[in-house]
Image 1: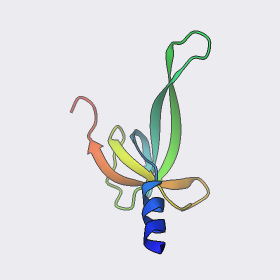
Image 2: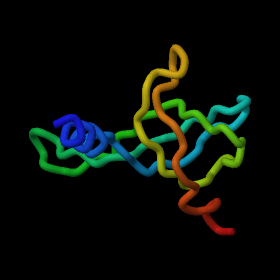
Image 3: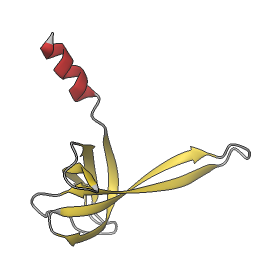
Image 4: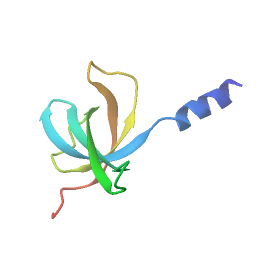
Amino acid sequence: MSADNQETSSESIRQVVGRVVSDKMDKSVTVAIERKVKHPVYGKYIRRTTRVMAHDEENRCKQGDLVSISECRPISKNKSWRVVDVVGGQPGS
């Protein structure tokens, strides 16, 4: 039973893709996650941005990189995400 329990918990870990907007901290990056929501009255889709801090152990992310991040246990007061992979480089390079 515990094996089934562990599988469901690993499946429920959220993983999103976002753009690095700040890499000035040691082992931390700020990632902007964009999503589209529909306006309740007009029906137009609007871009909404959420900024989260993520743990980057090797300091491999640079500003402008597209990264994949996943939720984890709280690492500090503001960090509860970690960088899984660098998906793409800076746009135009």
